[in-house]
Image (tube, rainbow, N blue to C red; front, side, top):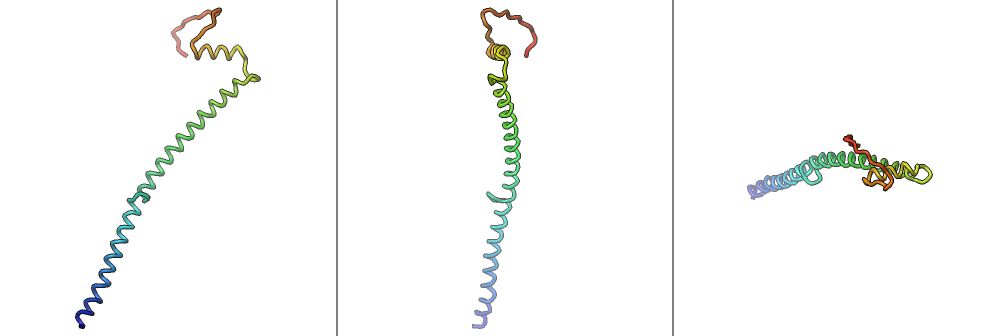
Length: 106
């Protein structure tokens, strides 16, 4: 009897320590390497920085297009300049225009 109770007094706490140690090791491993762990956080931060840079570039491009569209409004554009720009972009000429070819590119 005394041996059995002494054995229980040693094995039962040892079993619980092993179970709690295993659970702790599992939680610590997932906290560092898991789907939402420290390594994933670094990866997410890099992705966030990349997406912020892409957003800034797209916002700059949007602002550029907004300025170009605003400059095409009736009250702020000269119709001759608008026609000239349209002809240049579309590579078209009117029947009464003279075209001079050069080697220089725009």
